[in-house]
Amino acid sequence: MGPADLSIVQTHLEASLRDPESLRFRHAEGFRTVTGDRIVCGEYNAKNGFGGYVGYQPYYVRLRQDQVAAAYFGSSLARLGCERARLGEINVPRAAS
Image (cartoon, rainbow, N blue to C red; front, side, top):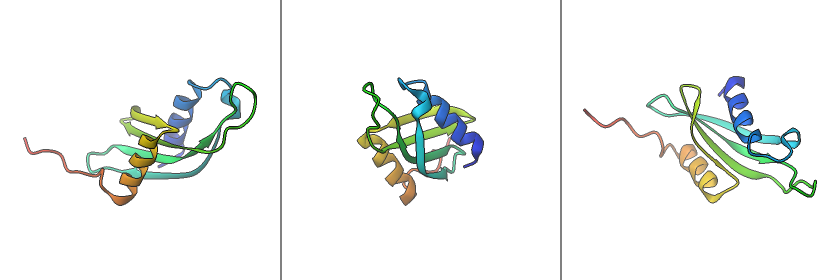
């Protein structure tokens, strides 16, 4: 995981926020699958419609050739995806053709 991967994640998340400038990240981790996809996990915090921070939430973003292939923010799917990446369960080999 490099700065370019984090930039893609940030841009993708900012597009859905009411106050994109309030976005904060922490605990970023990167993983690579055997198929070459990159997974970026961590936590983010941003201001809500009332102007207050809501607290850190998990995020999971899967990148394929510098494009977002899957993204989950602030949900149990984000938490589960990151747990599976840490355990190596997402790194499944390609099916034989």
